[in-house]
Image 1 (spheres, rainbow, N blue to C red):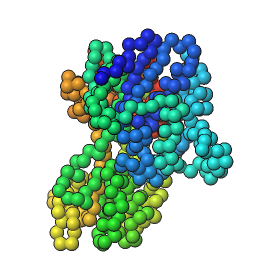
Image 2: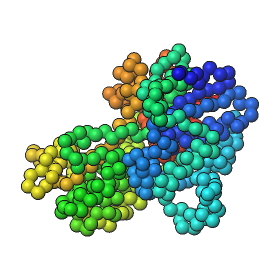
Image 3: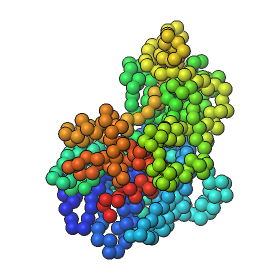
Image 4: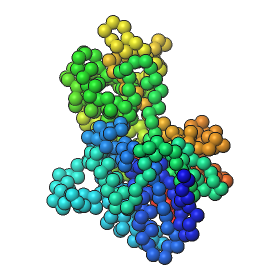
Length: 433
C-alpha cells in the first residue's frame, strides 16, 4: 500500500534515509521549529532505517565495536553551534535545553551526580555506544518513530518523492509518497576495492568489527601480523584496537600513500573555520577540499594517536595497495604495493588484511530514478559538489530536492562530519520552514 505523506496545507514533508546523528540533528531541530506558534508551516520528518537507531555506532552492525572513544568533543552535539535567527529567536535555547549532550546526561536514568562526575573528570570522550544512546534519546525527545525497513528506491511523483522500501519484519514491499525532499545520510558501505578475494582473512573497515574475536584468535596462533590498508580514522581506530588486544611482538603494518597518520588536535585556529562561515566563503574550492582532506576526512584525532605511539610493533609502508594474493612459505597473504622509489612492486606479508581505505559516499546512487543515476554519481562528483546549493542539496532543476550532507565540503567543512550537526540541520531545513 502506498501511503500519502504530503499534500497537507502548511506542512513540509522530508524523508531521511539513515538513522544516525545527522538524522537525529534534523529531527531535533524540526521538532523545535514546530513548537513555535504562528510560523505557518510544520515540518514532518520521516526517517527510514534498515537496522536500528544508531546501528552504525553501537557495535551491532560493524563500523565500530561500540567501545571506541568518540573523537569529536561531546559539546559539539546535535544542536551545535546553536544557530538562531530573527524568525525563531529562541530555538537555540530550546535545542540546548531538550536535545544537548548535557540534557541527555541529566535525563533518567542518568542523574546530576553523573553529569558532575563527567565534568570533574575532565569531560572525557564518550564511547560510540554512549553516543548511540544519546541519538536514541533525541528520537524519544522528539517523539519520532523511524520507519524500519530497507530503502529500495525513490521515484518522482509529480512534484514530490515517493520512497520505496521493504519492511524490516516482513520483507514486504511498501512505499510512502509526498516528500518535498530526501536527505541521504551515512558513510555508506566499505569501498571494498581489494576485499573481493577468495581469502577468508581479508576484511573491510566495516566488517572487521563484527569478526574481531575470530581475527584475534587466529592471530594468536601465528607470529606474523596484520596489514591495514588506509591512512584515516578507520585505519587508526582498528590499529588502536589491535594494539590493545594483540600479544606483544605482533606487527601491525599500515600501508598508505602518505606513509604516516596525520594528526588532528583541538585548537582555536582550526575550529573557528568549522564554526564560522565567513572565512570559509573567502576560500577557493581547491583550498576548501584541501582543508577538509587535511582536517576531517584523512585525519586521526590525538586521543587515538596517543595509543598508537605507545607500541613498537607499528610499521608504515608507503605505497598504494594494488592486489592481495596468497603468500608463500609460512605467510598466508601478501599485499602488493606500488610506490615511487621502486620499479618492482613491494610485497608485504600478512596473516590478516584489513582494507580500511574508505567508504562509498555515493552509495545512494542506485536508489535514484534511472534518469538521475547518470548525473548523480561519483563520475560527476566534482561538478555536483561545486554546484551544491546552500541547503546541502544538489542543483537538479526540475526535480524535488536531494540533500547529501556527506558531499557538502564546498559549502562548509563540518557538515559532512559530527563537527557542526546543528548547523547541518539548519541548512537542510531552510527551504521547509
